[in-house]
Image 1 (cartoon, rainbow, N blue to C red):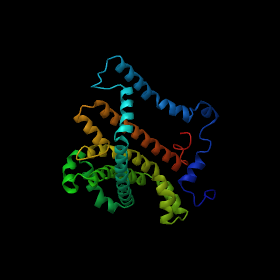
Image 2: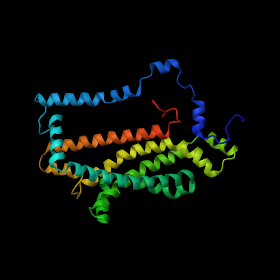
Image 3: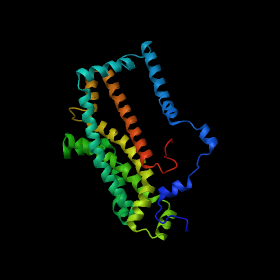
Image 4: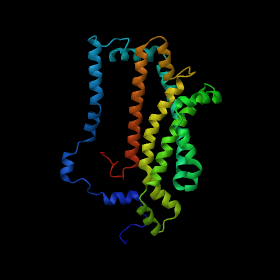
Length: 286
């Protein structure tokens, strides 16, 4: 017991117990991060090549699925002569505002329920009931309450973001190793120090997993919100293109959503590597 730092948290303990985690043979055969990143783009690149070949060969009708080259030309035209950048900016602003509001609510509720059985009894059942309601079912009521303006769209995004962050924050707190908590109490850590040095760092992997899910859910909610009464945004662009049978514009918006999803996931992974560098499963090179 005398060899243990009395202020050690999970960060220090993880670093102390994972030194030399990879032996020499493991390091020699390990695939580098750059190679893994390149491999992750292999399947999408092959898909685009096959898609283009089928379209150019006449196997895919332009009215059904335009070629990637056609979609690129459409993107260039809408960027230089249309409203693509404005619509993208509007959607990003809505998603960011909703994510910030919903993330804060989910995190605070997760902390309350994670630390208090009384709060769980008072809050959790209601949250689980609301979580089970589909977006399309609640949309008419939200429109009655808030109209079809920006408030309705931000509200739906915030609603979708709240639940994954709430659930993963609660789960992360409950899954902290009891031995670490007991060790901290034996060493005389105050309750605030226990939360700051043991519980929150221990719950952080689960919380960040919730953030990754919430980033995806935010865009799913926004797609639903922007299909009703919107005058701008990617969802509005797609619905407007549907009226004129512009399949190329519809596919373009789908591709943009996919690229935004990839970018959001890369940001979440970067946060994991930065905030969980002490963790053996999230450190550099993982």
